[in-house]
Image (tube, rainbow, N blue to C red; front, side, top):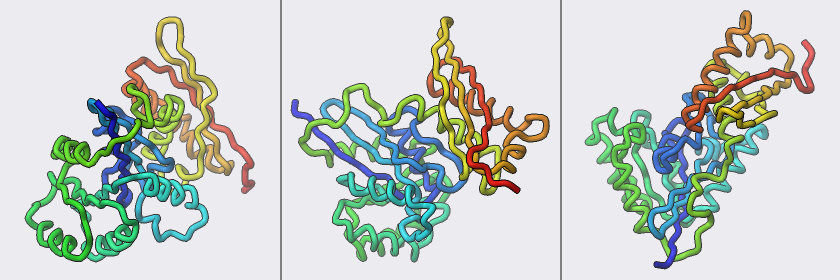
Length: 285
């Protein structure tokens, strides 16, 4: 049986459900989910192999960056466009509970210039009356060359199988990019670092989570089969250290416990996590 392939970019505004959808497609947590903006910073690839077909999904940063001129967001914008350019087909994911018709028309116009198949996914359909969206779909369909529309709930996996079957039909004859057992282009070090970043995003507020870097210092399997992981939270401003540590170390403890629990679930192994906070190129106050 000849091999087939399809490369798919998942785009949409922050918190539209891209990471939840790619995790459900793959069947493992490879991209973190969080209500904070721009949770996905890297271009994360998810891979599923079904019989002779390989589907590659690109989880991209928020599509609202498309008009962003802030130089600080260069990496995010670069990864967004890399995912779009690498793909054969675009899944434009919309949070149905925050659907804005005029805004959607603007994004559809931008996407229609890319000369790729565009599938619009209305996510979180468990939270809305689907009949309210139908008139808007008809207008969008007349205005632009949208290949297809789907209504799903990524959180509850509603409509996911139907969407997957549709994508399999769109695949074409090609050699695979990844091996049979691959699920992502990221390794365990990246995933565990992301677990800690996610915990920081959850526990801390404002600008702090976006001015840190997570470095792995040790990733070791112990004799009893447990994993020992040492990480550094690197910050560039000395005043952040007290905030991250919290009163009597309460914040860093909460971050460590959350991250350690998340790692254990993903890696299916007991994890012993150690975190150190260091200041690099500190700004004096």
